Image: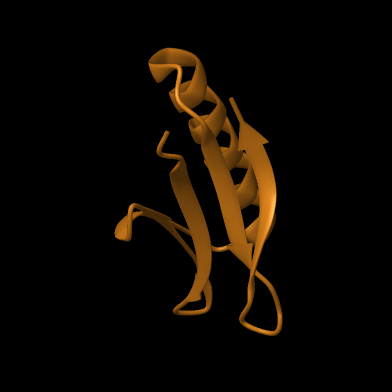
Length: 70
């Protein structure tokens, strides 16, 4: 089963939310980006019945899983 992954990456002094590698939103603050990404992943999991996760880039440029649903 495929997992939908939303990624929050550093971009232009803020944070870019990527959905399947495509830019969706830009946020000036990391916490707001994580909040919206988590809501989107949860809603996607509930609506489609498929697993969804959120990954965020840390200060070392590595991705960490911050939320999973389904």
